[in-house]
Length: 445
Ligand code: S3P
Image 1 (tube, rainbow, N blue to C red):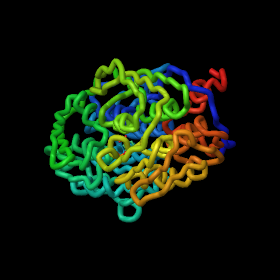
Image 2: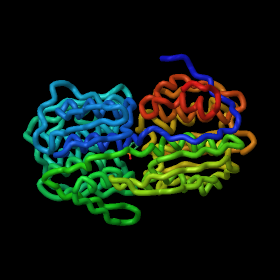
Image 3: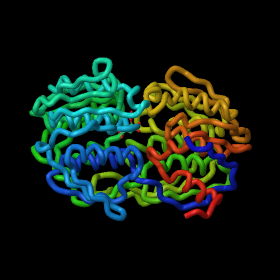
Image 4: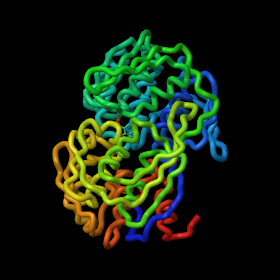
């Protein structure tokens, strides 16, 4: 582990920047390329720990990955010609990779073994294993298939048409089943009780797959995929900036007085931007500009954020699926908002890279934030003038917790010393460099 990094407090942030490429879209583009009949050149693919693990995983199934200066050319194997991987596939810290690749491996039906790092080996996998088994996959794993390591048996592949009703809205689980659906003998239907991110649906449509999305009961949605025979990915794809990475700078600009930050070419898919709706309820000044749709159906645009006087709000189950990765930042925003900010119905946070409810409450309390842990969320009592005292805190090896604590440092009275901030490399390797540049602390290039 590297030395702790001391951050802030800082002068107003005045910057124009672009954030690293979207992690969710990068994973999906690489995985769809593996299954495509034709090659694709991907510009701005995210070169971070999680998405590099995905490139290694597709190489294990014989995809050719040729990096050039700012792009990567991927030549896949199609839906039916994957070989048996010669080694264990390590998804490292990535829940998205682990879950989606299991669906693909089940479709290939080649004997393949999967593992992950200590955090990923604790995360629930039964939520994908069980529906895949109902589609005909043969999967064995630790605790009956609830945890990695895990093997998909070589049964020759091909899956059955299926209908699954997910107990929680999870884009990873939905995407696993939609990718598996590419190999099915009939339509695959997935109902989710909320709006989780729909990058898979958009990308598969752009690859010529018939995907339909219908409103089901209350706020749930039914996604149906018709197995296509072949997958044809667009020849050139540019991955937009990651809204979840942008969320750190949005938060920083809102809480550091006098700040104005402009973020270019960021993904603004409405199933990702519920955080902006929450912020607008809090009275935040965030402007969205020049939004256009790209070749894989993703809205991309620019955000301008100014320091704002915030008031507390309530974040409930309807908000959670489309803001799930931004919720830890509510601990920080809540500390600067007038009144009590309440996050509830967010039990899913307990099964992320760390138990994010526990991590956020324990770490922000150390910095002087009045925050209370609840079984399915947290409550923060804020004060626009009080904010955050500062002190020492740890990322606990969780990228988003580490970056959130660093942003807290920018807005604190005495600075925050963040242990294990190198965890940011999972999604945002140049985080510290950007932080130094934006805050004017360094002219390092
Ligand atoms: C992701 C989905 C989200 C999110 C994760 C990335 C994805 O999880 O937390 O960081 O790329 O599908 P859910 O499965 O809870 O939606």
